[in-house]
Image (cartoon, rainbow, N blue to C red; front, side):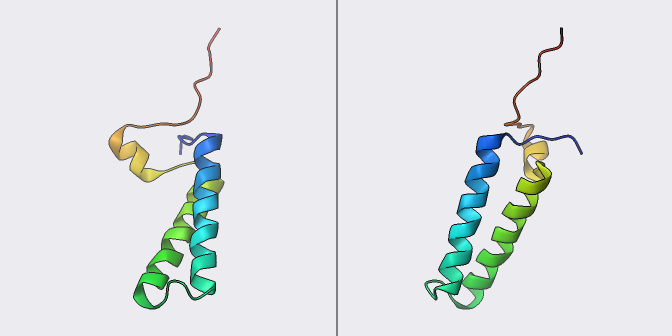
Length: 70
């Protein structure tokens, strides 16, 4: 897997995942929606740790900074 996520993208995903987890455990979001948010949070954390987002490859995107070849 080629990395396609930059540092800012990873940080945003981790913060959003943390907020989703907190919302669930604080009882703000419950039921099926709460479970869905936990699954999405887990996906955000996993993609941030491996620096790869499968959806980015489908859309041909990359937030990873380009390295100059000299």
